[in-house]
Amino acid sequence: MKKLFLAIILICSISIQAQNTNSTTYYIIRHAEKVLKTSDENPELTKKGKKRAIYWSEVFQHVKFDLVYSTNLKRTLSTASPTAKSKGLKIQLYNPKNQNSKEFIQKTKGKTVLIVGHSNTIPSFINKIIGKKKYSDIAETNYSNLYIVTVLNGKTSDLLLKIPH
Image (cartoon, rainbow, N blue to C red; front, side):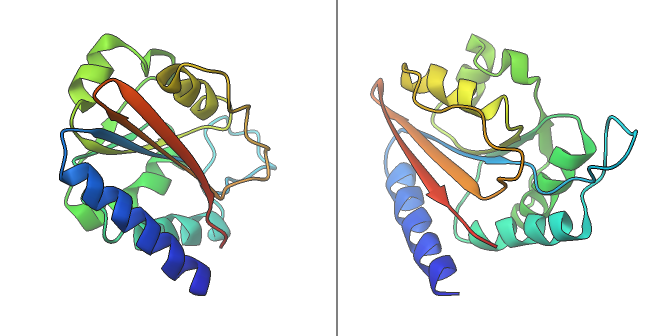
């Protein structure tokens, strides 16, 4: 509980800073735990994954998102859904291969955005925004990373938090 409280305070301070400027802030998480032992190429979240999705909405309770993005897969949509619902936002679909397109960057400019992605797409997205290869693929068992990337006047800052649950 103490870690959640500290994380919320940090996230709120970043969110308040972003709202007071013309900056773009991306909050980026991986989908929650998915069913692993299945032949389904588009598996649902496990019971634990569904709880984590709700937990993410609690972590983000004080962040004023303008947009929520998810890939068109059950696990990412189910992870994004509690937060989007709590904010009264519709989930926007994105293709992770086109995430760094000029169109995507323009749509999100000046916004506070939640992006729910995958272990092998999140790091490359962040690396392109910050202009260096800092992050590598996320371990298959890691569902606790929260990346926060802010772009202000052409300069970027990034932060990686571990939000346990």
